[in-house]
Image (cartoon, rainbow, N blue to C red; front, side, top):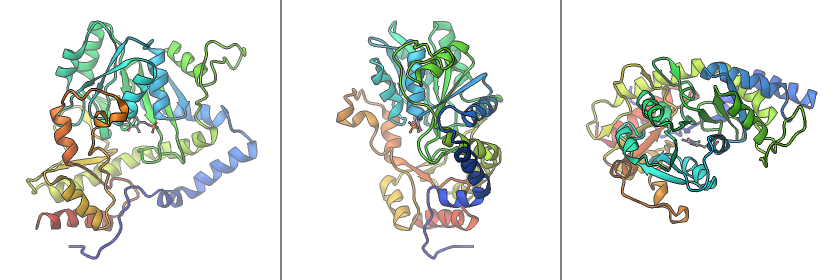
Length: 372
Ligand SMILES: *Cc1c(COP(=O)(O)O)cnc(C)c1O
């Protein structure tokens, strides 16, 4: 079947998913409102426990955003002025900004064809000043954590995982966010587990890190004793958001299965187009959960503009690498893979809200662009 009539396909459709879960989400809302429970209440604690179980760590600490999870993790690792932290050249800007905002220097390293940090280059970038490694698991596909952890353990450098795009992903059954000192999570509405506003969390097995994060998100205060243990921040995950997220977390395993099916449908529908590089990788033990379906088109913006003109919302926010923005004052040392992929990347709609007709239309439109 070929769908030619023009239509709109949204990248995510929060209204559709709200309608699907309306009963559960409304019940969570009324429960919070009827209890008048807004800051650090049972809904937050329940969600934290369920998130930790899902990730496979002893602790989860809800914070305001993925950025805050990165920020508190760097502080917990003792990173500060004069230190270097290795980050990928291709990531969302917050990864590097968190490093800058603790006074340290982000050392950028290029990525490989799977969009994640090149471990050979990471190893070569380590200096006596390196105080943390900050790999990112982009789009639902994890960086090579077995190798990264081996290097980190040999050198005694802590690892902070930016897992903001990979909730539910794993290598050899071990979850993203459970390998390093901490895993950092974002519940920004576009993420696989999206809230209704900003939100985030960090996960860890280290009781000291958990205690540090719990205090620092709350002005440095120990809530039981009232003692201030340091100059902290105000960055808790809202209790109301936690209640919503806990509802959605229960559905996450089935949503991941649906995403994998959609990814497979895209692969089948587009595999015969040589100008496209699709995000499917053969690596035993690695599990892709398709937070994003980011492909590379040799036709770059011509391709993504065409999809947009046909009503398909695609993400192309990586066209201009973050380190090339003058306001960030980062050194552009030349990152060939990041530069090449930046011209070519395009994320197709990939959410559980998308209907079969909509994904048919996406495939047909891509094929039409290539004259198929
Ligand atoms: C979304 C995201 C963040 C930041 O999350 P916020 O909740 O928006 O602060 C950090 N890193 C990566 C890779 C992300 O995708």
